[in-house]
Length: 212
Image (cartoon, rainbow, N blue to C red; front, side, top):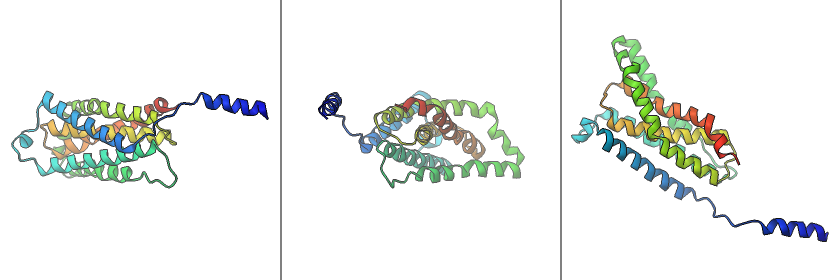
């Protein structure tokens, strides 16, 4: 028994106190990173003419609002996962993404009704937005990945999916503020592809980075 007590004392003596992960602090950091990302993209590439004139198109307001909702929902769920608890609900991001995916669905229906609108989905006009959006979300993705490593997410695959979705939504918002294209077929397909692609990358890559 004494040997067992001595073993316990030895193990406990090596432990160091760790400050609990605060979801609120993580959300503030993500918000600051998202704002800085959008500001940097605007400084480097400029802002859309309609936004610069103070008369943003309703479609731009709609898409930007959906990106903000998706980013917020995914961030809330991801930071909550860093401190797992019984009974927590992380399904809000799925509903937000579902709402966002209505845009490419409407765009494809529009192309079916008017084939001339297919010009908006040509790779020559969209691949640059997709790549720029993914790059713009890297800072948010890196921050959330580091945040997850400090916590204890129980579901690594879901954590990776949420990190990718949040970072992609920030990247999609950033390029929407600067992209001069107005067509729903372009915005609804290529811009929405940013968080979808980022979520896929996150699901594939992030779990190995946050695994202890």
